Image (tube, rainbow, N blue to C red):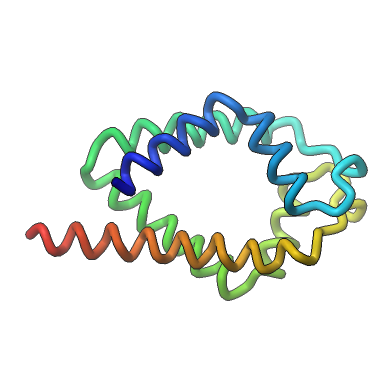
Amino acid sequence: MIRTLVGVLGAISALFPDKIVGLFEKLAIANPSEGTVRGWVRPAIRSEGVLIAAISLRNGRAYAWLMNLTGLFGAIVLLFPDLYRRFATAFLYERPESIEWNERFRSGIRAIGALYVFLAAKTYRERHNET
């Protein structure tokens, strides 16, 4: 079930990277019209989506690695949401100093981190209960 959901989300990212950026900015950024996303971001989202969708089709070592990485990222985001915001701003935007985060999204960042940790733990437990 989780593998299918992850695969579908990967496919959506691959097909609609502009919509993903727009949704992120609408929810997370207080002044989305002030920032310009770096030119490589949309192709990277598309590539990441293709990779995630392809890995999700297989239930092997690559999928286990993907979910472990997801859990690690989720833990960092959950525990250090401000660090994530600083890193994401500098990494994704051409003029990071012009970006103002929506303060309400701080809770959203933590919720996303908690969800990633939960999904990774659940798939880990399922993998180890099968053996």
